[in-house]
Length: 155
Image (cartoon, rainbow, N blue to C red):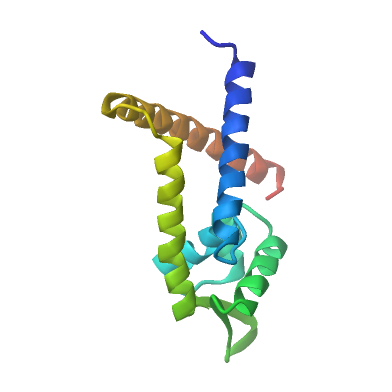
C-alpha cells in the first residue's frame, strides 16, 4: 500500500496539472479557471446573488465579486439591482454567457478525455467508484467541519 504522502503528492500533482491545462484552454476563450463554475451555476439555477454564488463555490463574496465584475465587463453576465431594495443584486447570464457555458463544458470534456486516455472501461468504472468513496468521505468531513464552525460561532 502506498503511504498517504505519496497519494497526496500524486493528487496535488494531478490537481496542479489539471488547473494548468484548464488555464490554457479557458484563456483561449477569454475566461479565468474559476469563472466557468460561476457561469454554469447561474445557467443551472437561474439568476442568483453573489452571496449565493460564494456559498456554493466555497469562496468569499469579495472573490466572487471580482469574478462577476470581470464576467460582466466581458459581456458574459449582467447584474441587476432589485428595484425594491437597491442593496440586493442579481446576476444573470447573457446570450454570450450561455454560449460560454457550452464551450466550457466542451473544454472540460477535452481535458477529461486527455486525463483518462488509455484507461480501460473496467479501470474507469473502478476509478469512478473510488472517486465516489472519496467524495462521500469529503462530504462527511465537510459536514463535521461546518458543525464545528457553527458550534464555535464562526462561519
